[in-house]
Structure formats: C-alpha cells, structure tokens
Image (cartoon, rainbow, N blue to C red):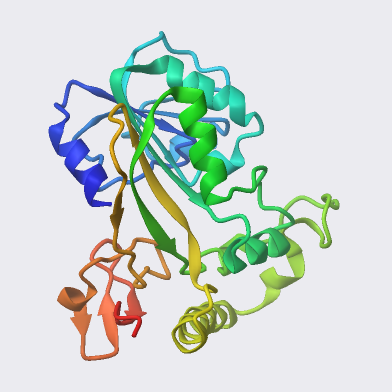
Length: 276
C-alpha cells in the first residue's frame, strides 16, 4: 500500500513500530530497516525469525507503557483476536499522539474467507468483518480516522499441503476434523493444481460475470487527520506462494502469461488489472 510506504519513509530508525499478531514477522521487506517489536501468543513464532525482538502477550493486555509506539501494524491478525474492543483500546493506549495504525483484514462474507473457515475448521478466525464494521470499530475505539484503503485480492495460499499435515488427534468444533488430516496424504501436486485453478477460475468469473469471488478483504490506514480517505487501485496479481501483491507485475513478467514474484521468485499466472 503506497500510503503505508509513505508513512514508513517518514519514520526514523529510532521510532518504534509494534507488529501486533506478528507470527514470524509482518511486511518484512517494508519493515526491514525499522525498529520493530513483535507480539504473538505463540513463542514458536519468534524462533522462525531471530531478527525480530518480541514478547508473548494477549492483544488486549499489552506489556508496554502508554504512548510508546509511533506505528502499529495488524497485518492479517485482527480477525484472530478474541477481544476486539479490548485490543483496539490497547492499540489506542500504546500509540503516541499523532501515531498511526495499519490494518489488513479479510472480508468475512468473501468466498475466500468462507473457504478458509470451512477447510481449516475456522482456522482461528474469531472475528468476521465487514468494511464499515472494522472501520467503525477502529475509529470509535482509537479516535483515529480512516485516511486510505485498498481492496485486497486472494491467492488462496492456505490451499497448501503444509497446511494440512497431520496434527494432534481429536475433533475441533466445526464440520470437519482438525486440519482435515486426510488431505495431508494427497500429493503436493494436487494442492498446487487446486490453488492455480482457484486463482484462474475466480478471476475469470469476476471478469465475465462481475462477481467478487477473488476479492479477499481490505488494507486500511488510520491516522490522526480527519480527511477524505484515499482509495488506492486494487491489484489482481497476488503471489500464490508468499501472498505478496504485485502492483507492477508486468515488470516481472516471464513471457506473456507468467510473472516471477520479486519476493520469493515463485512463478504465477499474470492477470491484467484492466477489468473491462
């Protein structure tokens, strides 16, 4: 998101960013030279990225002093937090005056989110967002204003053999057993073919019938300024391996039908951003 990139360019290396629900680290390329502190409930996540200092904590009970961060990033994490009002209140507390917040969340009514919840028995998605719902929750809880947003498109990265590897026995609430263990016995080629088919089919349906099957959710930027929000153009080209959206995929094109992701070097089908 260009607005986030501009915000990051305005931060000095000494100013602090909180990566809330960080996993192994959010937006690694964009945040590479920033002072970032991660928060996650799973201590194993920090072993996957030794360069990210972090703490294990609940999102609604952060172990930081008030007014201690210049930017908070919730990158595909807000939907996993069980106490949304408490989390938003804590974000407001730890942000400095003039601080900013970046959020990316799935559309709770999208095909992608429904498929994710079905295959992974919920997959840890505890919140189901609408656009106005998430904006209202953040603005009322923090006093910040929506300053820019961008539609995000799916690449169905969760349709991956690694996701369905065998896990501890026992059912979870939902229609299917934990992690659908039987899918883990299928060859990797089946997952690659299914993911490719989903990407092509949803985008063709969208183009031909004006559906929104390939839409994933939104990237939202909140700041102290009460201005008309900037709307950034969406991009259909999202890497099926790492999930990175590529605004200028033709610059990475391999022939006329493929492009190579500049972040992970995975080959992807090249889609035109022209919806007409």
